Image (cartoon, rainbow, N blue to C red; front, side, top):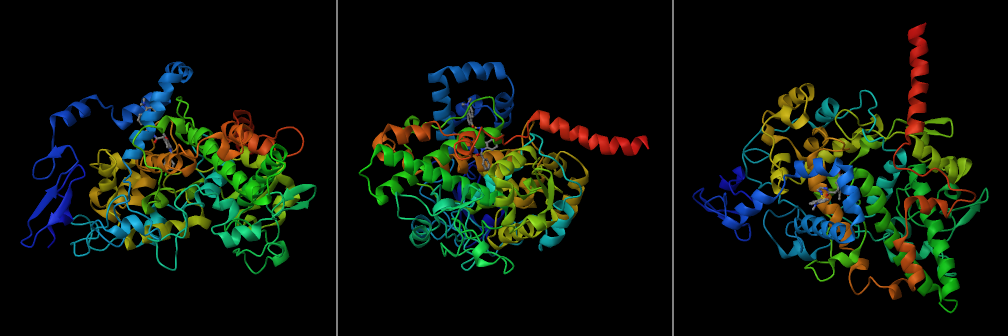
Length: 572
Ligand SMILES: COc1ccc2c(c1)c(CC(=O)NCCNS(=O)(=O)c1cccc3c(N(C)C)cccc13)c(C)n2C(=O)c1ccc(Cl)cc1
């Protein structure tokens, strides 16, 4: 058989099988040597000695606020750290891309064919004894069984950091810009643009974009309903939208992504970004009265992408990380460094980002309770409640914890599909991915989950800790202290996230200057963007509550409320 099935080459060495079940490890560029690339060079030994483990680093980052308050106030220190963060995280992502899901060796296709999601690790070779190589069962347990035992929500568990449903919808709206699996070609293929390209607002292609544009003053088509600006209906902007037949065409909103009719939260973000686009057009038109529609549109689109990246780093990732170190968006930091302004979305990043446990089972909008099934494809709710009530309600409702046994019933099918796709694409095991991202592999199921019940379930399903699948491992992994996720999610997803944000064309030296964005006015819109401002500037009256974290007061009030019903029962 193929001797590489047992993954003998360590530290990123490439295994080359030979006929008589011998192999060679290519240790080029790994700073390790020996038959299995297991011996570090002197320099590497020195580095390993100095580098803090990811766990230690994390502990530092979520504690010692006094230290980080000082660091955050010292420009040259925080700039140095941010530069290190981006360089360290980006270098772990192969650029140009090396593997596709169709080849376990490097091909030119991997670099040039944009239809492929790239792979951080090549697929398990076909002729190996077991699906994971040589370890674990010859037949993996049925994905439905795995989902039933490990994913189905027993009782709703809140996220430990009090994340709000506004975060849930932010994540969904943002990630669907670049996670677009081309089901016709298969789970290893994408029809997306490999980065933050604004497609959630402008559509995936020029044809859709032209249907969404008004071609007046650079603006997007919109309509006024109850005194507020909303996206047009499909009857006015005939883009392809996925709605059930129960929703008539003149009630289907036309959005940048065909499936954004699914939830009012997605419509809300689509609507607020549309308002922001049209607001920025107004500002640019005042600055440049002689600009035509095309220049107003194109420049505004670049500003919207800039605002998106700014908000993602400084509001969204800042919340996800829960760091006291303030992350910030400053492309200048990378100028003069060896940094490639090109990104390729990996299918592992896609699977990692399946955070469906964030979704609650029902939604409370200003006191009205909606079951998920009544909330889905409901185009009345957003316009009935209005943007203010939507954003305040989403900001006040708890999101679910991304952990085992917390997938709502409505999202179980997605979890099952993710496991199936991981097998179809022959993902290597969770432990192999941990090693790829410089994490220590787990030596027991208990060490992985941090408890015993799920560990026992895992053992009965996979027999060997080395055989635990990628998505399963990421979801059942015990969370780091003060964190929403386990080390796998953070250390594997972090680099893809940082690279995807900082490798955007607008961050490159030739783009990142006032003239690209219509002068200092446009440039400053990006530099001062924030999630709160995005809603404040586009909702009449004073600023609504906008928060990715359920405010303590609200949270306590809900706790008391829950206690009232609970307590009164006990008292009776
Ligand atoms: C904790 O929870 C989280 C949760 C989500 C997170 C992060 C942290 C991080 C930051 C990171 O990647 N965290 C690892 C090491 N930390 S670090 O920042 O890279 C770093 C590395 C080296 C030195 C550092 C340093 N020095 C020099 C003192 C200071 C500060 C940070 C340093 C990013 C991007 N996330 C995402 O967007 C993300 C989006 C989707 C997925 Cl699926 C997964 C993640």
